Length: 315
Image (cartoon, rainbow, N blue to C red; front, side, top):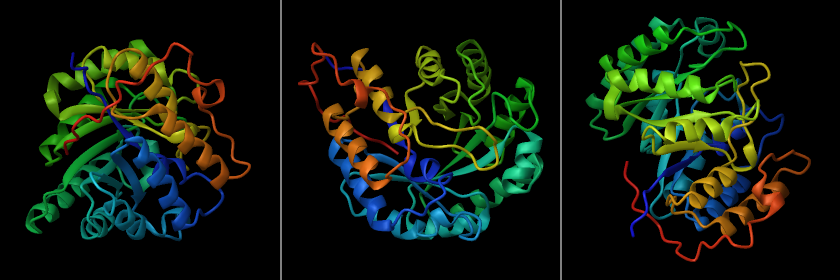
């Protein structure tokens, strides 16, 4: 029987590294990427195209994208906060560009120094540049702090829905919601996703959750139940936003893959090989805490992934 496929986007190379107080050499980033590729991961948010003086961890963005594109079957996602970054991301060969827009006005000003309205205008400029340049790159509007903000506090759901509509009208191919600061709970997640799906339809397909308060997997399950089949995750639970105090820890890739495979979904990822990739990451980042549970606990004795096969990957 064919199992229901679920797509995992590994965001550790971008979201996981941007908050660290060290700069990881390009060669080590590519060793990490290659290890996950051997495990069957095919989508990577490989880098962020931002000024190196602001995020020196991302200064080698073009090199990392080039290294990723050299591997077979990979779809490269990158993040770009503005037209300048998106232009560089297009030139580097990104398959998907995520433009971050914050549902929180306070976070928007802190993170990208723009109001929400200015961010939507920038998104429209990026979409026009993509079209005029003849690129086939997908443009995603990543709506951050959709479930709350450490600076502003509550973010009204009506504002999230309005921002999603505005992004689609500006030309975005897809919208995605992110719990940037780990405030969300499953009931809230299910409710807001349903509301946004009412206006976005199939253009809302993915989710980005942080596990800051221990609800990351529960929130994934909440949207899985309503049909979402693409999830961002970071190996070892690395991650966080430099402009969202206390927002540490993405959902751990290995834990999410284990939950999905144990439930009968097909991620196309070999868990044994993914755990080996996590162990490699520990050697590449000495002293850096990793938060995934399954790598430490081990797979249950009855867990059998002998059915392992790779599902087709689509942009």
